[in-house]
Length: 100
Image (cartoon, rainbow, N blue to C red):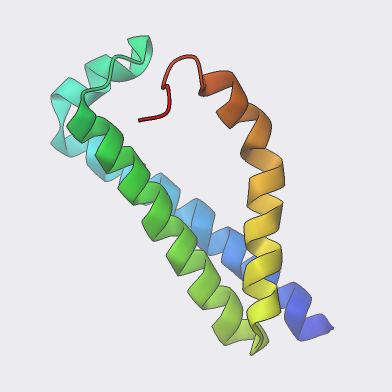
């Protein structure tokens, strides 16, 4: 049980690190992106970049959770916690970014 909890915590920590670092790199490398953030007027390529960062962060979190806990359950729990934590945010953003 302790390994499972540690795996979930490690996965969530890696998710936060990847999201933060990739977001900083994106902002540093793409000045147009920085100006679009305030008004949420992203181009398709900006949206793809954001989705790619999210996917990369989720894969990294799951991988670390599995490695630490030696169980895929830890990755599923970490993913479920992230889903629960951000589902309301995504529902609010649905008006800004309709389903493609």
